Length: 130
Image (tube, rainbow, N blue to C red):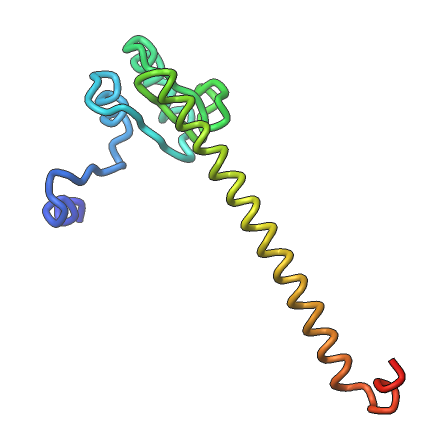
């Protein structure tokens, strides 16, 4: 199944299933960043010394030690690392903003629906007094 995907997209497509390969490419200087989510300690712990000895920077998305595993970012230099972490922060703020706007819109829609139902089902003589 993987071979079909590679044939379809050609050599420009990189499979994300080979964790060690991506980090070794980073250590060799062939890629500038590797970003992965939900890694287990056994996925990342053996790779940390290789990455650090190559001069790369590795942490989780909260800029905490990578030994905690989870969501990992590894970059070729500190400037790029900070830039990507900053983008994560901006994306997180955007998600929070959109989620909050969605909740407010749903709440307003629900209140309007309740008011419409209230005025539709109350007798006319009562609604004229309101």
